[in-house]
Image (cartoon, rainbow, N blue to C red; front, side, top):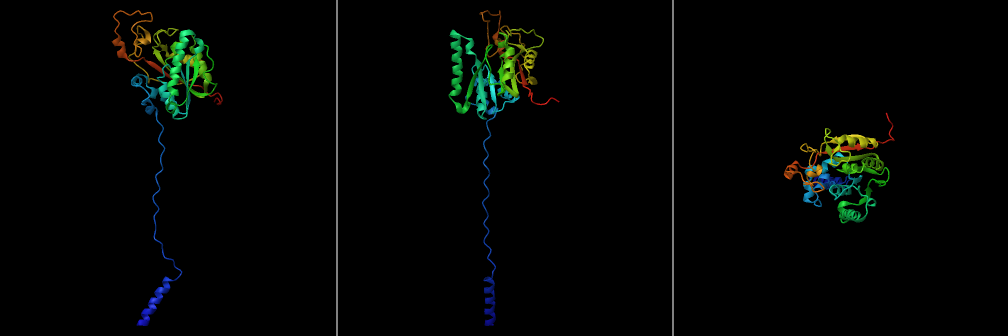
Length: 304
């Protein structure tokens, strides 16, 4: 029996020493780390809420709708955009930081100082310097703002065919007074790339009202703007009621300036209308405005 037991032990030993390898314990790999997603760039809504915009500026959003208007004009953060006569920078304070997030460029087409002299030139020059200083002081937020000019006698807004969009907010009536509104549309057409956008916001005169050729009330017929744009070569793309105000009758004693934000209570000579009640006009809010989008056609595309 002892011999049989020893034989069994030897058999087991021989099996263990055979060519078979022992199975190594399984070690599970750690789970792959989740990919880190890049933060989404700020939206126009985020930009409009930025703390570089004052409370007074933001209060006007209810009438001027900058987010909806720029979305309607299809402005992309990578675009090169010309803003005509930006004034104190109300729209620039939305456009510049938005374009900065995508590597775009804002070109401010300011007053043409060559058309002025003396005290008025000095005053306008200072206003332009003050405007540019705001954006130069914080390029991380505003990017780079370039400068151009527009007037009855000005040259190119930008090199021909170089910009993605040209925008004007409540300016056409100003150019009517000196009869160079058509020049604006021609200059915008020249500056835009094929397929580029012209965006126009303007105080709207009801079609039943008579148009002053000089735009002295600040109100303009929508058909007049359409004719100027199409005459310059643009194709009409779309209109929107984003900036409409049905309560505005456009027949106020001191033109559009009777309404907020100007709230004029007399004419330029200081004459007032009898029993004038400014509260009535303040309650109407800002003016009724057309919002029109035009496209520069791509003439290289074959016509079907």
